[in-house]
Image 1 (cartoon, helix red, strand yellow):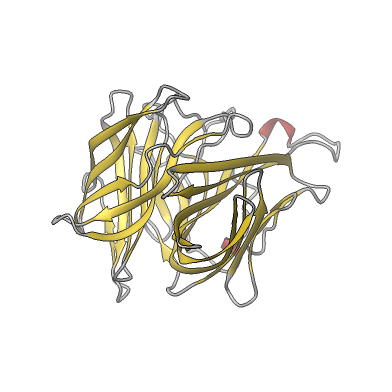
Image 2 (cartoon, one colour; image 1 turned 45 degrees about the vertical axis):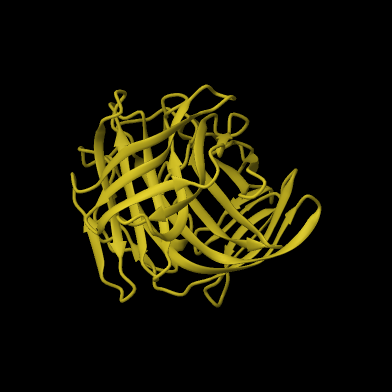
Length: 344
């Protein structure tokens, strides 16, 4: 759903209007709004190893540069984070990029998903598949993602509330249950990869209520074809300020959670030797679709993005268990605001 963005000076945000999402236009960038991200995660096997991956492109409008006449003014910034989790090796590898938009270095197209940051790229192709390519310091991705289900419009017709005030909202859709295939480069070897992936695209003028320090979020592909989203915004004392989510059954029926219908309860915690932050790496999550357990497959999946967006957060491959303890899916858990207060 969400990812750590740099601290930006915020003007008084306006409430976003309810409007139907229009595709393919809304697959593209929305530079009139302050923040935006395309976020793709996945899980599968490569070379007999269980791997997870994430790739996130961010676009941020720089308000102070909007009226500058120079064509070199940094009116839009593009960031990218990527990571690979090696479950057997108990290791996370990650990398990051940042550049101002323009000059063929970094671009976010407005007509469809085409986000480029130097040699990192995420694009939606003519047949509706997504393609992601990147080469980092310790890993690489060359993957294709084929939709197996329609777009999942989140919230109320694509307008997802993120707080008690109307200004705290985003336009938000997901594409769960993507069939993922290609290669992952790890330890100098090109490993054929096959698995399932999840894509989120979200854009907003403002998300965080003044009381919120961060959030917890899950996006889970269930083995039966269902898709589960759940999130909470947290106050400094750890209590939930706002919550929400959705559940789409294999037949396409969608249940949207209202405020108060989703609850995260921490079960086990891990303390990062890097940041000193303590994260819940196992949760019980109550949703309108049932009670689940979310459990990290590797504890240390903390990402240090201080070289790009300025934050430290936890984002990693996790498994989903039903109320009887049976594993029913995999996906990603994201937790922000534990190392430091998140600022958007």
